[in-house]
Image (tube, rainbow, N blue to C red):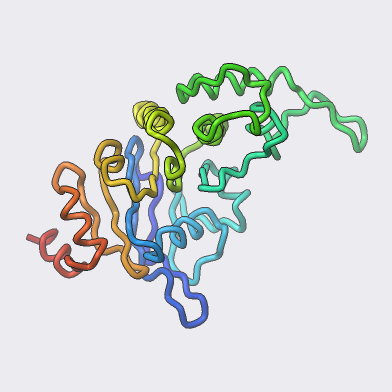
Length: 258
């Protein structure tokens, strides 16, 4: 059985005459942490939006968990096991931790016609298990999100991805707005997930973070994948050269073929 969790072939997205993504071939295997890097407007977010069905691709094919998929919307992608932590986090400030983790996926004890009785005990238990799985430490899960630090909020968003038997976790700049200690906490969570065999796609501009956490680095430039580099076979200067265009896709292909 193949250990490839996600594979894209010729993934393309056009907005009228604008080619935001062109012919993206990508794959990630179980237990891998793959970084996606590139300058602003390079196609990174466009690529993720096609995988998660936030947008529908212009052309190309996607395989996930062993089969060809055609997700109609983000809900279908999420139900299949693709969990995403966006920069905006998508948390409800006035709700506590269990309510946020189960927002839109509430557990129900029983239904009375149009009314439902929620199973708060089961949701609280699953929340604690999800936090333990990711190594997230929240002193009081009954606190509302608005009373938490930026790092705690980010950790809650990540814990949510691990609570629902995710098969792939995508993190979009998870530490961009965090301080040093909070960044270290989030990075430890990524290491924990990776150690448990969870495949992680990490979109980041932080070279130190990428080199510390990731196995491979996929570089986007002007809507195309221009390099797919193993971390232990490259360095920061090499990656930056592909990001800026000092090195080209043709040069990468010549090296790969040698």
